[in-house]
Amino acid sequence: MITESATEAVFGGGRSRVAPLTWGQQGTWDGIHEWLPEIKPFFTLTRWLSVPLVLTLPDVLEQLGELLNRHESLRTLYRSSARGGATQEVLAAGTVAVTLFDRPADDPVEFHELVEESLRRAKETAWDYGTELPVRFYVAMHEGIPVLVTFGVSHLSSDYLSADLLSKELAALLQAKVDGSAPPAARSSMQPVDLAMFENSPDGQLLNVEAIRYQREQYKKYQPSMLPLRSEPLTPRFRRGELESDAVPVAVRAAARRHRTSPSAVLLSITTALVRSIAGADVYSIDIMQSNRLLPELVGAVNTLNQIVPTAIDLTADSFEEIVRQSAVAMDGARRHGRYDARSARAMALSLRGPDWEPGSQFNDMWSLLPRPKRPVATDEAELNALAERTTFSWPEMTHDEGMVLFLDIRGTADRIQLSMMADTALLPPAQIEAFLYAFERTAIQLAVADVDLETLRL
Image (cartoon, rainbow, N blue to C red; front, side, top):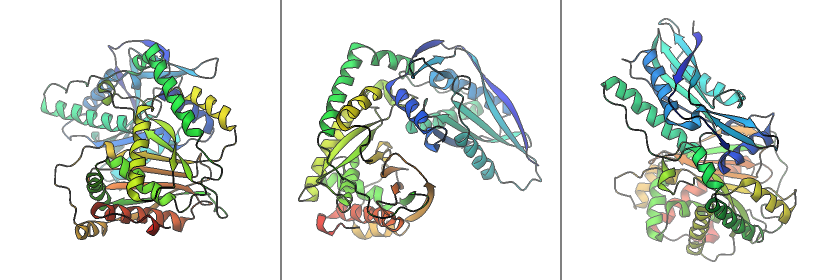
C-alpha cells in the first residue's frame, strides 16, 4: 500500500521585502478572483522530473530549498489589500511543505499514477495565498528511495517559460549533488519586487501610457459580430481539440524563411487565413499573448510576465503574402506594447466599449520561443507529408464556461508542435474544431514550398 506523509524543505539567507504586485501578477490576481469559486487549471503550472537514484530524501529536500533560495517568487506570500488588489511579501527564511508518496516493492501502483495524482492535487486545490507559499512539491519514492519530483507553481509566481526554467534548474541541482560538484550558478535576472519598483517609476509609467494608447487604437477598429455564433451550443459548451504534429514545426520554419519573417508571424498568418471563413466582419479581434522576455534581465526571470495585447486584424487581404505582412506588423506591435497596468487598460476598454462587448479570440504562441534544432530545415513536400503521417489528434478537455469564443495555444517541443484549440461549440462544432487544426497543418505544409490561394482555405 502507498504510504503518504508530509515533510518540509528549508530555505534561508535571502531578503525579506514587501512591494506592490507587478503588472503581470496583478492581471493574474484579478483573473483568478474573477473565476472563483471555480479553480481554472491554467492558474497552476505543473512539471515533473526524475531523481538520480543515488540521492537520498534529505539530498532532494536540500535542493528544493536551494531552488527557493534562488527565486524570490517561490517564497512569496500574496496578501489582499483594502483597495481590492494585493501586495507581495518575500520571506527571507522558512519552510515549504513537501508531500511524500512511498511505494513498497510489492505494490502494483505505477509511478505515472503517482505523478498524475500529484498533478491533479496541484491544479485542483485552491491556493491560500496569504499563508501558503506558491509552490507545491511532491516526491514519489520506492521503499524510501526518491524516484520522481513533481511540482505545481501558481501562475502568480510563474508563467509557462518560468516553469520550464525551474524544472531545468532543479534537474541541474540534483545532478550536481550526484557528481559532487558545485551547483550551477544562479542565473542573473530581475526579481518580481525589483520589477514592480521599475513599473512604478517614471520610465515604467511611460511604458504603460504607450501600451494603453496602442490598445485604444486597436479597440477603435473593432466591429460588431466579428466572430458570430452560428449554431446551438453543446453541453459542455466549450471543447478543446489538440493536434500534435512533427510536420508543422519543419513547415513553419521553412515558410518563415520563404517569406523572410518570423515563425510566430507565420503561425498567426495561418490562424488569420482560416478565421476568414468564419468571421462576420472585415476585422477580427485577437488577444496576442506576449512573454515579455525581450530584455536580458527578464530572459531567465521566474515570474509571471506574460500579458495579452488586444489586436485588430484586417481580413480584407487579397493574398496570403499580404496576410503575412500584416501578421508581422501585428506581432511587432504586440511585442513593443506587451507590458502595461492591466487595471488601467481594462478601465480604458470599458470606457470605449462598455461592459458587454462580444467575446473575441486569443493567440498564445509559446512554441516559437523554444531553441531551434541544429539540423537542416526540410523543404520537400513529400518529406513534410511523410512527417504528417505521425500526426495525432485528441479531445483532452470540455468546460462549461470560458472568457472567449476561440483560444489557440501553440506549444510542444522544438521538433513536435502541439496545436491546442478551445472553442465555443456555438462558433465551431467539434467537427470544425478538428477540421480547423488539420487545415492548419495542411496550410503550413503547402506554405513551406509554395504560395497559398486564400480562396481554397475553407472549413
